[in-house]
Length: 270
Image (cartoon, rainbow, N blue to C red; front, side, top):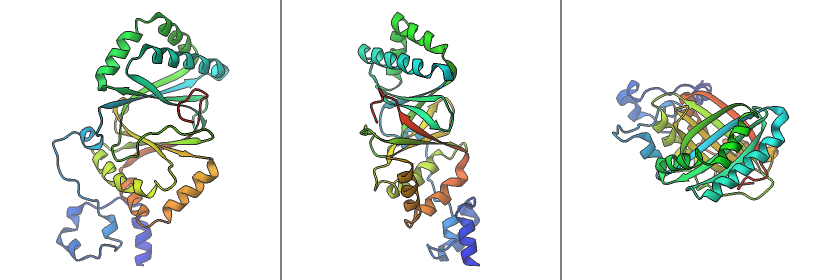
């Protein structure tokens, strides 16, 4: 019976700590009930952005749904836009650019990094909105799109530093919509969970939203191919402690989505 309860506890909603009361002190730390308890998050007056991110760097994630007949033309247009922005030296740089191969078809994602906080974003927009060459490219590109979305993100401080990868990789972006008020709890558990996923250097980047869809988290992983992805994920489940991290974080999620990405020819990370 205890084994059955343990399996149930892996994905059940964790019980509130106060519901157990003083009896929890007498439970073995490895018991099935102790794994159901949410780790205590101390009350704080700090915003979660200050607690979870330690840099004044803003990331911009652009999502473009491209009309199928314009895929090649769109990529040429966007590459020209990237070159123009870099030439203007606006405290921003393209970090990565991907095409979705599994998930939302005919979709492209572009990740930009702004140094200098939101002030650098304000300055870049002021410069580019009066740049005729840039606005012409943007107007032309708009006719090729079915939809577009923009988010401003902060990077989780406990995630490994973002480093460009050499060619031949695929990426997976796993996007989560969390329940409001659970971001610190998510970060608290993933600060431990990431230690189970560093052995193969697959952790590329992780962000939480500041502007746009809120309580949105993106974890981006890098693999040589789909088979290695499968083997790496299965290996994590064999490591003691990984299942506990999943048990704590799954109840915090409202929605989740996974997309397989391949870098564009002009992406800084391949």
